[in-house]
Image: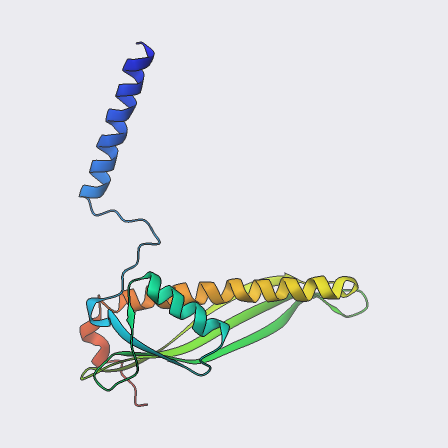
Length: 178
């Protein structure tokens, strides 16, 4: 088989695989779509200028969600709180913390007019090595880790919003008073 025949064969195989994958409904993992009922959404937060709120706004815009002012006729995503906690995993000989586990928990609620309110939480945990000799570098590293954790929380919120489309009718059963 010559080079042109091998090249054509590969093109045909790749084209067939692409058609088979698209025909079976396969989507890449990061392809989460927000339900149609939430395509127009108002976003409110415990702090409108926090990093988490800004990340959430940009992620919603990337998912083609139109952000509008809060109203009683528009679904609302309300970021309730962002909590950071840590616990010691290991210690140095002088009893200072050597390794920490940092957990970032975000509480939020989704309110859909005429249906109800659903309160949800998401959390991300990361380990962090602390070295008291390089305190400045470690504080910058911790800030970077927290930003990464916020990004992961925001993507989990988007995934949970996308899951609402499958159990959208069940939101009444799990609604909680405000």
